[in-house]
Image (cartoon, rainbow, N blue to C red; front, side):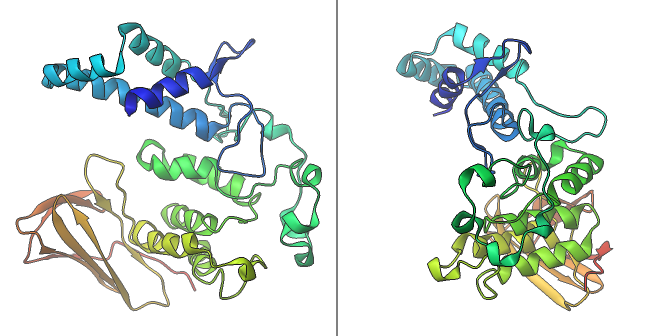
Amino acid sequence: MLNQISRFYATRGQWGQQSGKYGYFGVMGPDEFQLMMNNNCYINWMAQKSFEYTSDTLSEMKERASEAFALVAEKTGLRDEELTDWKNKADHMKIPVDEVTGVFEEHDVFFDMPHIDIHSIPVAEFPLYSNWSYDRLYRYDMIKQPDVLMFMFLYNGQFSKEAKLANYEYYESRCIHKSSLSPSIHSILASEIGKPEEAYSFFEFATRLDLDNYNRNTREGLHTTSIAAAWMNIVYGFGGMRSDGDRLSFQPSLPERWNEYSFQVMYEGVLLRILVNKTSVTLTAIKGGGSIDIIVYGQSITVDASGTTLPLGERMLAR
């Protein structure tokens, strides 16, 4: 699968005439208000990571399981020049970013697009798809849902808090959250960068999207993805869980109006329960036997059936 995915990315992309960089032209990223754009940063980033992950996996397989590697290479017709090509394209992938501010540009020319104050749009005009023509909808720097912020969430550990803050503040003010997945991602990042009130507000947005008919389209069906994202909001947002590093990690916080919350995750065959209250965080291996090593508030700890209790490290003040 990795070979075929990388082959697709290697044939779909092209080289820019002036930049000499590799990228993708005529595409649409997660933000569905920007279509047929060039070098969408999310797409380029994900393609680069796919090339790199494929190459790393094949290298490890060749070293540790040479017979299996030979079978895969034969079955897929893998050639050495393909590996060289994928590395070259990954190394020269265009990742548009303002070097001064650290803000990634969603796609070529995004920073130069006309700006619109999203709060100036009358509520009666929502949903915009039903009231605006496409040429009006797609001409501004208004975005439907997180795009840059999405890959910063997925590859969280590769970005500094300062970079997350800069990109959050730039793109949050341009997002109308037309997608039901949008508010929870913003809440998760807001919680991480020290904006507890915004984090809780976006959490309410995600959980009450249909109950309050925020987007004026509940009659068309429930947003089940928003309901799923609300779970993510608690686990990755208030629970501060991150799963993109070498070890599972947590940075729990507690909204001011809550007394406690808990959730469970399966990790390395062990069912882990996390309970957060106003003073402490308790982690317990409740099923699966044995113990697991995780990271909490930046410190490595071992959790077993007897449980581990730590002081609550960051108390949210959202009201």
